Each structure stands twice: as structure tokens, then as C-alpha cells.
Length: 292
Image 1 (tube, one colour):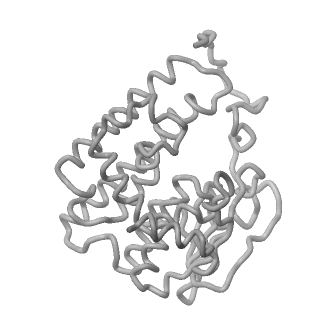
Image 2 (cartoon, one colour):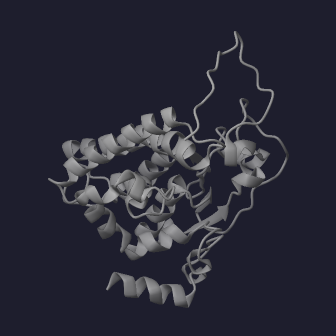
Image 3 (cartoon, one colour):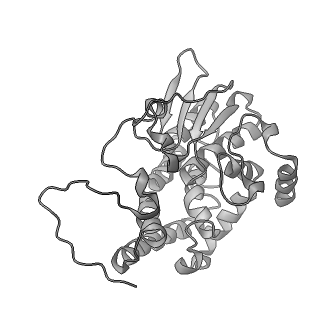
């Protein structure tokens, strides 16, 4: 593993070149739109602009779970935002999410459209709107919200920290990889200890906390994130693996994983989602078999 040359920070930092390895072209130190482009729109109450990264999967799983419960009002159109092409910097997307990150949601179910950005905020918005996956009891609700915000605060160490330096950085540097590996393993241990005493994160019931955490840490221990399962010895976190596998076979989760996905097995991709019929018959059959 190569050693990083010692770096002396300048008195004032200036952005004079792209940096950041594989995703360098999407990183910049300023906000706002780079070009004019309206967002597409469908016919359903909810318009989702996203990508099937962990943060995007949280929301599509939530929509599919709501629809599975019979909430017809949760029908949604999901349009792909290609971050490699800079779609997140279009004027239309910035209007919905000034932070230029996926996912972004436009709720048109009321008289006035409401924008919601940040995946955790979207989960809470939908949970409260439909009365699902977020308990009313104050103590139970507090437990769900604590684990939801734990994920929001912890995932940057997994994604922007470990994932970047282990998988995407232009060079492999021991110090940041060691630093973020240590923190990710600590987080996995937090989850493993909690799940040793509880079926789901907030207790006996599956909630938005599980959806949020599973999208990151569940896919990590299932070997789908950063190709790092062996490196992190994820099999040693037996309770996390048990929990991840239980959620993974839920039909709504399997559908949600497909939405706005444009890579990997073609049978697991659905670039845009407008109706349940958009899922191919072969995929529905595979989902049903996995759930049995």
C-alpha cells in the first residue's frame, strides 16, 4: 500500500483541479444549477427523482412497502437522476433539492406541491402521511427516530469515508482506510449488539429505521457494497447478517432495489417506475420465488 506524501495545507484553499477519483466530476465547492433543464413529471401524486444508491433505495423501498399494504395513494413516478452526467445540477432538480443530492421528492397530493429532500426527511414525511412504519407511542417513536438519525449521522463514515478511500480514491492510502475501517467496524458492532436483543432495530416491528439502515449496512453485509465483505469480516456480525437477510427477501424491498437502477444484472434494473406493471413478469416470478 503506497504511502501518502506529507501535505502542508495552504493558507487559503483554492479549487484548481478536479479531485476525488471515480466521482471527481460530481464534486465541486459551490452550489446551484449549472444548466437549465426542467424535470419530467408523471401522473401520480408523488414524483421521485433519484438513483438506486443506498440513499435512493431507502425511499423506493418505502413506497413499495406502502403500496404492498394497499395504500393506493402512495403511487409514484420515479425518474432516474444520472449523477455521472450532472443531472443533479439541473435547474429543475436544484429547485426540488438545493443540495443537489438524490433523492428528491415532490408531493403533489395536496393543493400545493411540497418538496422534500434528504432521504430521512422523505421517510418521515411518508410515514406520517400514511400512518405506517413509525409508531405513535412516544417511547417507541423515539427509538425509531434515534436509529434513523443514527444512520443519517453514521453513513457518511461508511460512504464518503470508507467507501471513498477503499473503493474509489485514485490511490490507496493506509491512514484513511485504517481510520474509516475502524469506524465502520465499530458501527457494525453497535448494530450487532442491538440486533442481538431485538428482531428489528426499534423492537419487534419493521420500521423506517430498518429501511434506512438496511440500505447501507444491510447491503454491505450482503456483499453488495464496495466489494468489501471479506475485508470487513462481515460474517462475524451474525445478528446484522440475520436481520439483513430477513429484510432482503421482502418482495417490496426487492422491487424497491430495482427502481432507478441502471447497472448490474439487467433483470434487476428498472430505470423509471410509473406503475406496478413496469416490473417484468420474469422479475415478479423471481421475487415470488425468493420470498417463499
